[in-house]
Image 1 (cartoon, helix red, strand yellow):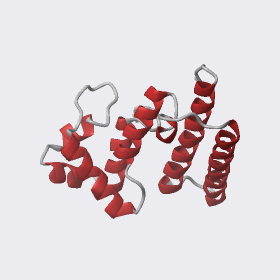
Image 2: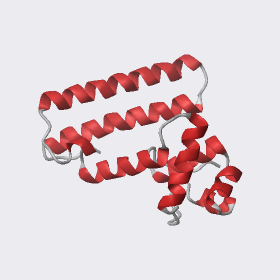
Image 3: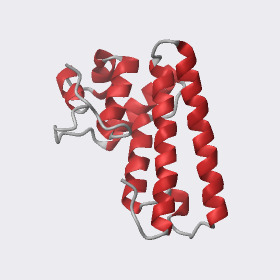
Image 4: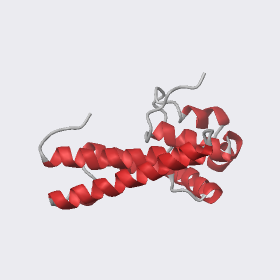
Length: 154
């Protein structure tokens, strides 16, 4: 049975990497057993890779897929979640027009990714990952809007 993982979480990032490069390759790359590496993809397991191992996994994923590094993206998403705003906005107030513009760009990107996924007729893991990232980007912009107004977005 596949465990549900929060999209954009570190566990989801590790599972994405394992799906792309394989457990055996990942384990050899970080000099750990396959079970240890697989445990990193379990949100209920407190064990996590150290920074060097996470960077090695991200680099291998980028080499294999050409996509952006999932662990780095998960780390950034967590920081933005804690800040309640995108990193770019953390040190300055964003004008409402700029915020709306960014939101519309992200919604457009998400809509395009959804159309690509839908056109396939069957789930494509690469396109599905892209769609999840685009949806998360929309959430970050919405969280920034809520933060501007002193609130939270669930």
